[in-house]
Image (cartoon, rainbow, N blue to C red):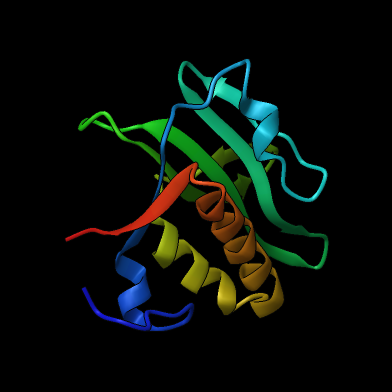
Length: 131
């Protein structure tokens, strides 16, 4: 794995954040970000706003779910509004999504990265490179 992988670098697109344990009704409040709280939007799928601004059509949401290999990953989805209908995009790899956010709000992307690094320092998750 490359050393010195940083937010904004193209190689950061391949970084996925993996939680050590699944999110559930008992622990979902442990992952609050900026006064936002995870909400279970479907069975085993948790979401929470990561970036929403009145003056920007772009929005992004944390998505936490278990994937096929049994790992619980923290990915992101963009919000898509069509008329009165609001939906979330397919999940986007953690690093790729944060690199997308850098183009809209570099400080917010750095704040989210700090949040994830705090989870990692608490030994509750870690970064992995995906192929």
